[in-house]
Image (tube, rainbow, N blue to C red; front, side, top):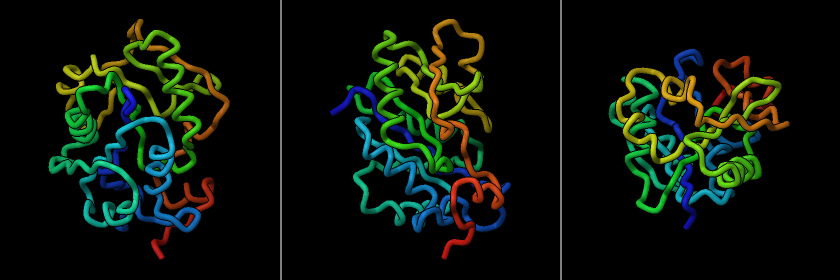
Length: 200
């Protein structure tokens, strides 16, 4: 078992997407959330923890054949921070860090996850490792378990950004993979990832 886990955040409401559950819309014949989950499963990160909330049962059914650990976030209405906290709380004792993925980023592949985890090790296991492209920060990020107490104090609809800002122990890691910036927020965004905003 790896000492870096994967936490996939898949609990949000996706309000900018409309009334249909965003993470179940189809990309390449599969639900949007399935892409990030499959990438995590195909990587060396272990275990793969998927945090569900909004439309939890449907999302869990969409991922039922994958070897993942489901964590239900009953407080998902209170924002992204609650999902990050739920994922970190589920880390097994041997996990020294977690790579945090977003369920609406279907272009992220296992090789990128592995490269970021390896870079985190190679750079002395900093408090966080954040991928960048042309100076812009993206996702997924590797977060040290040492941030657990600060993550537990987060609130609202923010991820780890507020606790990483301005820290000298956060490493920016340049990559040439635009997937780190390619998320899906609206139906129009599906044009960029080759998907269909309809679930059928």
